[in-house]
Amino acid sequence: MIYTASFFAPENHVGEVYSIAERQPRGFGLPRLDLFRPGNLLDWWVCPKSIYPCKSAAYGLPPDLYMKQLERRRPYIGMWLRELWSGITLCCWEADPFDCHRKWAAEFLRKRLGCEVTVR
Image 1 (cartoon, one colour):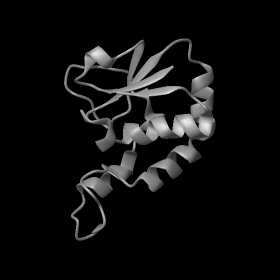
Image 2 (spheres, rainbow, N blue to C red):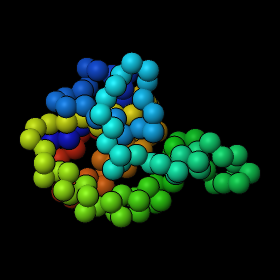
Image 3 (cartoon, helix red, strand yellow):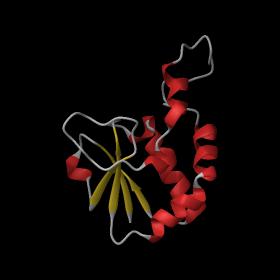
Image 4 (cartoon, rainbow, N blue to C red):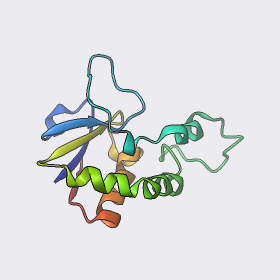
């Protein structure tokens, strides 16, 4: 089982906890799981709306681009999944998972790799 959660909701952390964010809060020191990091897609979020006029505050980055990025990483994500021994939690900053890329990471894991994922 894979879980997702905010860094700031330790009550939702299960098993080994990994950061899937570009940065993590000072003092956390979690191992980074780069396979799910959005990388330069975050430029879209911090860029002015005049350049990306259709961007919505409800979505931190374009889901179609993030899903394509995950699809390119799919073989590596699959290898990583085969190494899992128990439940893990993928963490990032946002308190609400539906304002965050972990929502799409969970969707990718469910739909493309058949994983059981709980978004918290």
